[in-house]
Length: 226
Image (cartoon, rainbow, N blue to C red; front, side, top):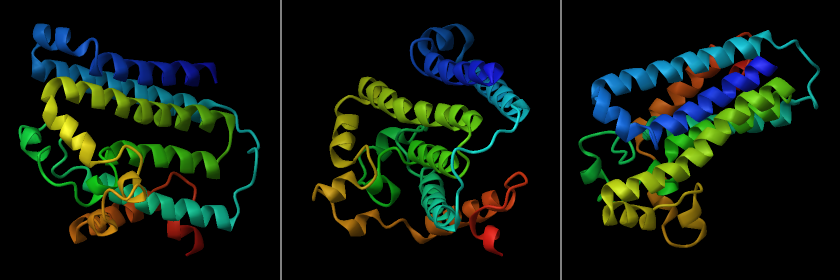
């Protein structure tokens, strides 16, 4: 457990450090390509450490048993999270893409009408679901680290993008919501705008089916009942 806590702290801390205060000075010294390779290596190695430490924690009884009702809710939420993830790869102004400055001026539609951080919320929902269906101390640490990084990383990303894009990102932030469906609930956007495109729905469904099929020894998603 101590190793898992340490690995989780390194994973989360290195992301915040390399994404924000240390990013600019390291890019200036290493060059963008070398820095991105270094960033990816640190992220991968710390995440693999998390997985190894998580698997090494002795099995303990869960705090509660997840029945079919909870598993059904988790399955539906993970489908939604998978659709958010699929939609986040296209026209996302938060990604390091040369088209980001053009994308930030577009109308918020699909997953971006749901939240301006669809990728981050897919990770948050993943973490919440996995805690609900597997409430063990080790999973609280592992999934909790993912939730913490994605949630507070979204706030940090907003601040960074304001510095990079100025009024363009401020306008995007005014047309989108941080929390899913925040604009619709507030009456500032229509529910029709939040319908993802057919390709995103298909891609998200395929991600959901594939991820729940190869779920590491535990039946998940619809496969639990098939």
